Length: 109
Image (cartoon, one colour):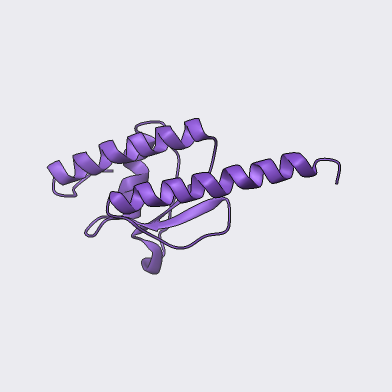
């Protein structure tokens, strides 16, 4: 394990960012499935669909995944990246949230 220190450092970073992003998403009205991975599965605020969030964030150069499956259509998958990437994601998510509230959850994609 020649790179153990780098692995441990990366593990700490992912854990910290995962917790930080989870708390921020909860404040925006998401529900977040507990995770020990390098991504989050989050249910978007009520009355919205994951595909709408995916499209709205893509317009801001933020890439996430959504799911066509009926059980997950209101969910998005967010990969944990660098602190800078996660700051950009959260800023974009706040803008999308405000836009959806202004337009009553409607986003054409």
